[in-house]
Length: 115
Length: 114
Image (cartoon, rainbow over all chains, first blue to last red; front, side):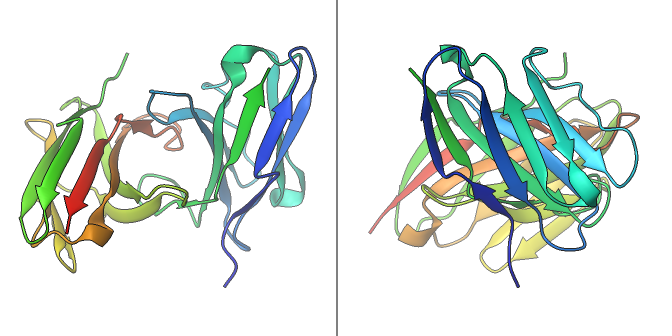
């Protein structure tokens, strides 16, 4: 079946512009996660959605970052007034249930470059 | 701050060699540990989800063990093949959090020469 998809695959933007990154999880998966990997760093948790519960936003690095998940399916990560340090690969993942015992399935990522 | 350490950072082996690497995590508040393989230009692929002390998991030539009391997990690859070349990531989930916040190590980059 279809896996997790993300768009765009690559995004180049100018400092100060807003960007939106999209994630389509696997159908039926209740949990959705956003991570990013900056150059030379490990994967960094950003935000987690589980069903209708309030999202865990504890990993968002600043108030310029926000995410929503509409209808329990597609999610959009928005970065306002982008900075050069926002350049990274942004990965989305989904799982059937809670992350503790559930395998996460990752999308191919969006490579964001802020000039 | 919870820290997950992986060693070595990188590893170069010959085809046919067996190898192993380590993931160290806080031994208190353990809930689960995940292993992933991330090949260049592809998505991270789940290998194992481990939840019980003493767990041993196997998938083909790859296996993993878990010691929650001392806070480490080993990943073993038997008879390495060039297609095993990838970065191997472990991720720790502490008990009591949202269970969505995986804390990843920086990975071990494995290169297998034919």
